Image (cartoon, rainbow, N blue to C red; front, side, top):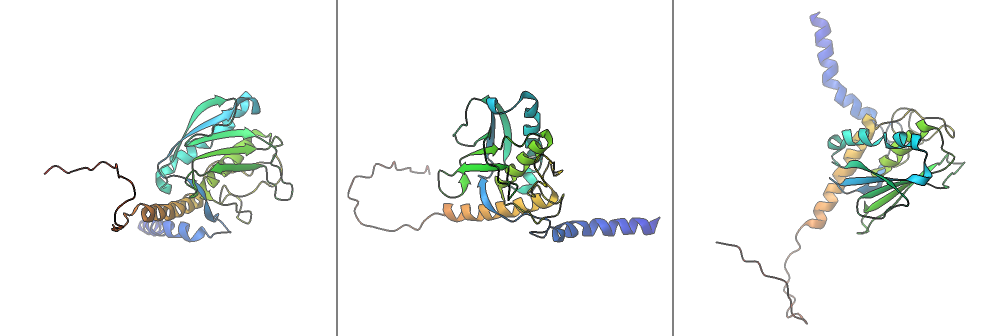
Length: 231
């Protein structure tokens, strides 16, 4: 009995390292470097009502909770909240709209697409639209498609060479055949964490105060208010 307990303790001690080393990019983990939501964003999710059947909505929304559940673990702290049905895509800050549209690419088995915009032109997303091809009709594949496209919004790229079950960024075997992925994997969490560590470093560099430089008299009056600290 003591031997069994010792073995269990050893396995528990090495399992995090094993999980880390097993997430090899291109094999079990997707590469990162795509556009992302700003850290700690609250994303409002909308669905274009005329594009989907009422019984498809639950499959479209199913991936929101799993991604929300790992927001702390990934370091993104991004949360999604479903706001309701709309009659057209919304282009507002931290808005995500789910729509139908012709994006099918037979050679790549490409059935969905993330379209996004960065107001600051720094790859931090202002708004996004997830486009799902009308050919994708199996309810389970709708969930697979959404969890995949949400992965893109956290900086993950496609990984068509990755093993089945290792990441949400794998492709479909064929149209309307589920790939079995309905939530981010351990490797997805690890890769998103790396992506957001990079983002945090970039944002820190951008927000660092610039050194003061005396450029002489300004050509126009400076009406910036002067704040004097209380003693």
